[in-house]
Image (cartoon, rainbow, N blue to C red):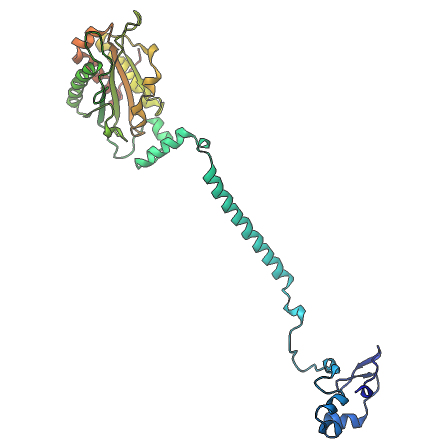
Length: 335
């Protein structure tokens, strides 16, 4: 086999027979005719050894040097199998984008789970929940203007009889209770408002109906302490639902009731002693946000006891005129 091989140098190139040879030289004719063209001769008759001896056998290392331009390559070059630069760049970009999006989703979920509730304004959150439970969109401009939503009961008035169904309220030395005064005045007041054409509900202190209660007006009726404070502790007090909203409707309610009640009863408006127990009355947080609400202390059960006990109908008339002033948009001036 070695006798048929020759040294390959830089001046050689593949010949027509597929072997490397020097330029300008052709292989011997007998070699071409007998071994490649006719397939006869000793190389053809010999089974394995002859092929190896002529450099044509399966084990011939020169078989890999054959050149055949017309035949397709059995396997694609490694370079052809490698992904193109553009494809590799697109794959990297898509992988990066997917990772960023997934990380963002996980971070947002964890932030939502661990976010302290104190970051959310409680007042706004509470009012939104109340409006949602009532099926009403809470429009702050609509609230401030006192405009009621469609189908809202604009002719209904709710009267809370202070302490009824819960306790007796303040109790004086002679046995007079605040609940007795509140009930008498509320009963007269309901009758007067019905005569004016209003729909009226009498409600207990912790009435289940107060949850999301809807009405044009809700007023809670109370009387002040039996204890002697000083000679100035006489007169009435009225306040609007400060914890719910401080808007034009609430202010106008206070103006109307204070103006009419003072004129009918002759009692002075003791606004100096309005407390947070009145402005943040528990019922104000239970009713519907669109319900304008207020509370009135009819008088002090010490220095005003006589008028509270003997003239409940007159007191009711003063409150009724104040409610009529508010419901009918009448003019009023706070004393």
